[in-house]
Amino acid sequence: MSERRVRVRFAPSPTGPLHMGGVRTALFNYLFAKKNGGDFLLRIEDTDQTRYVPGAEQYIIESLEWCGMQFDEGPGRGGECGPYRQSDRKPMYRQYAIELVATGNAYYAFDTPEELEAMRDRLKAENASVQQYNATTRGQMQNSFSLPADVVASKLAAGEPYVIRFAMPLAETVEMTDIVRGRVVVNTRELDDKVLFKSDGMPTYHLANVVDDHLMSISHVIRGEEWLPSMPLHVLLYRAFGWEATMPEFAHLALLLKPDGKGKLSKRDGDQLGFPVFPLQWTAPSGEVSKGYREEGYFKEAFINMISLLGWNPGTEQEIFSLEELGQAFDLTRVSKSGARFDLEKAKWFNQQYLRMQTDAQLAELFASDLLARGIERPMEVLLEIVKLTKERVTFVKDFWDQASFFFEAPVSYDEKVIKKRWKPGTSAMLNEVAGVLASLDAFDAHSAEEPVKALIEAKGYNMGQVMNCLRLALVGESKGPHLFDITAIIGKTETLARIARATANIAEA
RNA sequence: GCACUGUUCGUCUAGAGGCCUAGGACGCCGGGUUUUCAUCCCGGUAACAGGGGUUCGACUCCCCUACGGUGUACCA
Image 1: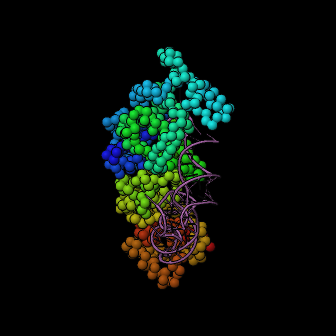
Image 2: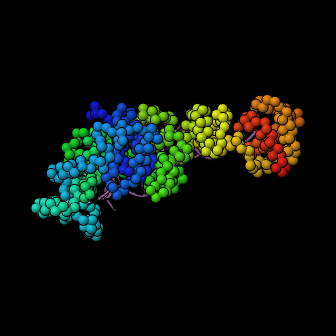
Image 3: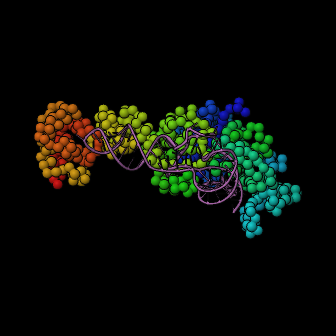
């Protein structure tokens, strides 16, 4: 058993963009594969053509790529067990369903949707505890267990629509082991005769999933908790096929919850929640656009790191992990049993941590493209200086503009609160004196400018705080930013003097 | 309704019967550094859902209740 090669798969259905919960499921699969030197496959489960959304599959692949989770086998990448899209595997499934019929584990059913509804209504009216197609009700329905063999044969020969249902045992205890939850016991009396093969010729999730996992030699099924209730069906299918010896181990992950604690996070939440639920921006066929972490300015490393710690922890106090490190540290047995709620503040903190890990040159490069979008171009040396001075006060690359726009544009307004507090009578005159000192300088680097200004303030007995803050107001427009003379050095003498002149001319003394 | 599943600070979590006066992180609050803002440093706030057992001893084991989640489709 322990000799078995680890092979896991992420098996989304292309009914829309992948949301962060899906990304986390993919990530845990990926990390488990890395940890165990195994394979990570991508399989597209598109057995429901009515829910197919154009672009969704591409979106899923792009998302995995952005996150750095390269799959070893999958659509567009190939592999020994292809194809990896269930619609492309369609011809393979029927024989498995028929095999189950032959062994008495499944049967043909001819009931129409109306008949099914009638059955459920009737059982409901009788106050039955369950309204299901199962061992006790199937005898009253239209199927190959209840109908005479010749009738069934003629219906099939006549091409009448049918489905193939699993014959769930009447009352049998199924004991299973889940890596996250431990032992799970269910009695089959609670389960129904699930449709395995649909009348449109496609398998349902249950059949396709089990058959493909078997054919692809999947060793561990790591999926969302919404599948926990169907684990017994799947286990029974493995038994019915005689594949129990190579049945994968199961691990059901607790779901990501909505921030208000009302249900699981779903695709439909879009960005109604005040934060993105998708890794990448998504434009629905309707034209509606949902935000993505990538477009919001998150580093993918921060996104992955943040998501990895939702429902898992390494057991140490380390919180910052590269994808590589996660692959070393990951352990399925340390996955928590309860659902996790995402915290935007923590996500921002992660991004800030990763932003600080970037080199100044990388940040300058990123800032440069942001500036370019604003029509601003500056030499890289200058941007490098600005980045060094402001990187400690930003969380996202896009924040650089808020923290550094005054390096490029003179303030258009002045913070009223600062004016009220600092711009006392005589301020303009003081600043003009400072301007006079600055105007006389030859060298204009931070040190050369700072010393004479301070000397002036001390010689005249001015209030250092008042002069400096007012000078900052003139240059920046508000009370923020790096060391004042680092600013003057970058914007230069001409611009510095111009801003002082404009401020003294425009700000009224309180 | 029924089945399954879960429940430690606001949030993510540590805790596998005595190491717990329940630890960390984010947030928040206070203080210090900074002539501004931010950073940084220091400190603080805040939780074992409730009730029964078992045990010398329960956050840890069992039962019940409450609350939450998922499932109950020819959807995945």
